[in-house]
Image (cartoon, rainbow, N blue to C red):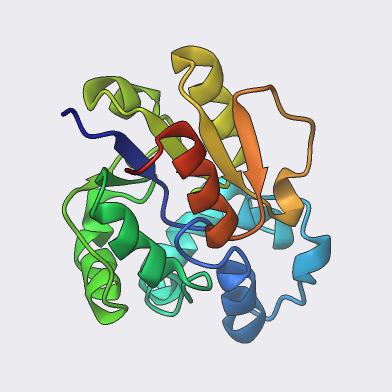
Length: 192
Ligand SMILES: [Mg+2]
């Protein structure tokens, strides 16, 4: 039997989507209201451009900090171990290779399974979906979900967040919890 292969984003999918905003409010002096956070890109909440912002984050150590202090979504640990019994799980993140150690430490600290971690260093995840022949993807960034759904036609489960609330095509399914996400996966791939 061929196991279904699932690609799983990390930030905002395994981690709670409010994590980054909470970090910025705590350490960078912003006052972002998560429920009103309609922009995905963090630099838009500062007076810096995207490149300048991430250079600052790297140099100041806040890039590591923001990943280290992220909080997991509710029940994600339980459901990842459960899914791993039935499916091949691949974490696919836009984080760069440089932050692999802090990412692996975080995964270990929160006692999540880790079989495969792909760090693309960019938002283009379509190539990974093709290279690994993934059957399903879990994501929170709307643009990624749309690109994967359009270019590969696999179903994408989109974790609801204030910054991704737009109309979706048929093969993108919006969910608001890991419980709902896993029920959706079982509809695509019934477990006997
Ligand atoms: Mg994400």
